[in-house]
Length: 79
Ligand SMILES: [Ca+2]
Ligand SMILES: [Ca+2]
View (tube, protein in one colour):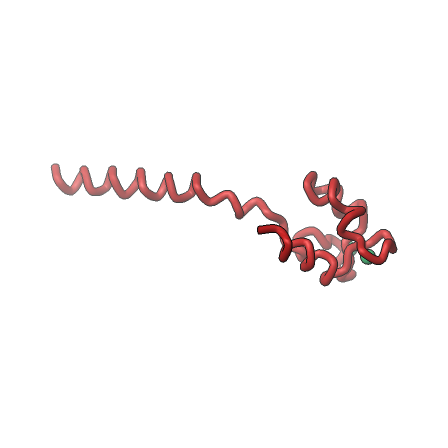
């Protein structure tokens, strides 16, 4: 009986750990850069609602693409 309780407790704990991990949905640069040209276009950004909303603010040099450093700068300020 004690063994069963241990299994149930472990299952509940791991389920809680997964539910608390809300950072995994954040897309990475490489996953967004579908054509691998090292830039995220507006079309590619459209796949991520949050990114598409902040695209203009993130595109520091205004060329219509997010470079890896522009993307990284945003990720750094996000606490
Ligand atoms: Ca691209
Ligand atoms: Ca840019």
